[in-house]
Image 1 (cartoon, rainbow, N blue to C red):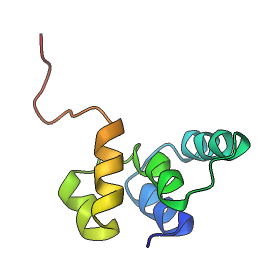
Image 2: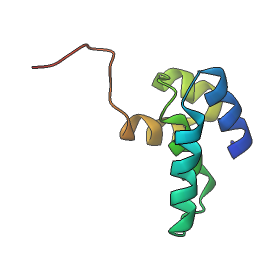
Image 3: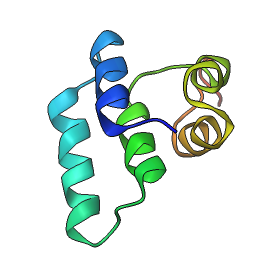
Image 4: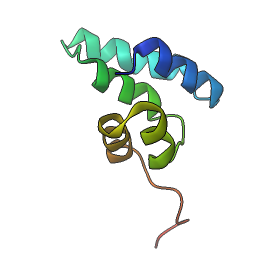
Length: 79
């Protein structure tokens, strides 16, 4: 299972907005959410990674959670 440190390191590598990501994690923890996969998903949601990239590195559960809460920008604008 991925740790918060691993997810943060990956997010840094992908040039995500780390202060924003950690702010989301802080807010989730402040309302009692401590599940590691949920917190990791919050960080990874800002990486613009594909399902396959996330699946390969962090496993199915995190890949599903992240892609479920992020906007798919692979198909361009939809009208």
